Each structure stands twice: as C-alpha cells, then as structure tokens.
Length: 218
Image (tube, rainbow, N blue to C red; front, side, top):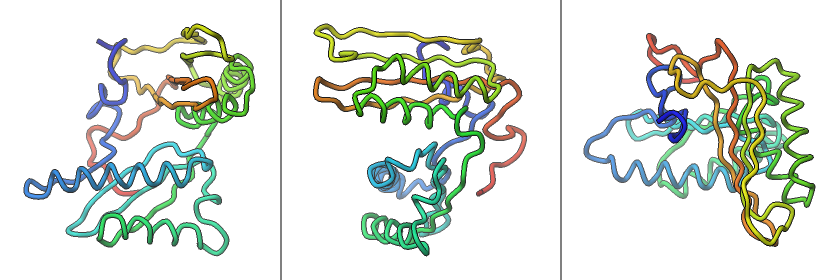
C-alpha cells in the first residue's frame, strides 16, 4: 500500500496534517468547492513563485489562506500590491472575506514541491530532462536529505514512444508511518505532450506537525 498511495494522505494524523482545516456540516459541499477554486486560482496566478503548499482554515464566515513559497517576494509585490490584488480576486471568487498569510519555506532545495516545480520549468524551457533531474537531485543532496526519488513520465525529450524514467538516491521508507515523506506531483506542458513529474523526499526526524498537539495557524 505504501508504494501506491500518496504518502502525505497516508500519514495524516501521524506526521502530516490536513491542508484544509475546518468543520461545517451544513455548508460542507459549498466550502469544499470554494477550497478547490481558491487553490486553482492561486496556483495559476503564482506559478513562478515556487509554491510548496496552500493551507486553508475557516473561522465563522472568514477564510484564512496560508501560502508556503520559496519566493515570497514575488507574491507580495512592490508595497504589497500583488498580494492585495490576489486577495481581491479570491474575495470576488468566493464572495467572502479572506486573509492571506505568506510563509517563506526553509531549505527550498529539499522541498518536494519546489523541486518538482523547478524540473517542470526546465523541461518546459526544452532543457533535457536528465539534466534537469540530476541538477535538482544534486541540490537536494547538498541540503543533507536522507533520500530522494523522482519519476518522470511521458514523451521524454520529444521521443515517439512515451516512457517512464526513475531516479533514486538514498532511502525512501514508504511503509514506515513515523517517517515524514514529502511528496509532490506536477505536469510540464510541452509541444509534444504532457510530461508528469513526481518527487519524494525523505529527511529523518522531520515532521509536518506534532501529532500530539493541535495544529495552529501560522
């Protein structure tokens, strides 16, 4: 099971917490759709900001969106103009007040989402996929991670037949729930089709949150 399922959802309550944290029986379907709309808009608008994850919390009618990114300056903009424009777009989309928190991630070279984003950007710029992957793996290994696995699939380098390439360095204990495995999946859109990129990163001792403590807003 550990080889098939998303390692983040498989560890919810152990070493990872939920990306959407709220409870409402009456408005659950509407809030769920709103969350999906907000995430889609943010990822589209901030694609070049190297986003790691988006967490959404709700208190009453208000929503709090925490955006974790490697390039927070691109989100905030000059004098906060960009983030204010984003807030207005989200408010117009969901028809309710929203507060946006920007959190700069530590050690972006070891973050699965940032690594996947970098590989996708380079593939879309027509860089050979092997060079993109090996460059990302080299930077991650210098960040003292314990293991990394990257899968790239599709018509690689414009080949006639689609194939899958696997790159592994170190260990990725997918069956051990006490170990936090950072995971991300992204798509590169090229003239010869879509290239899928999956990244697993293992760093011993790291956790997304403490399971014996209530997750708090950052």
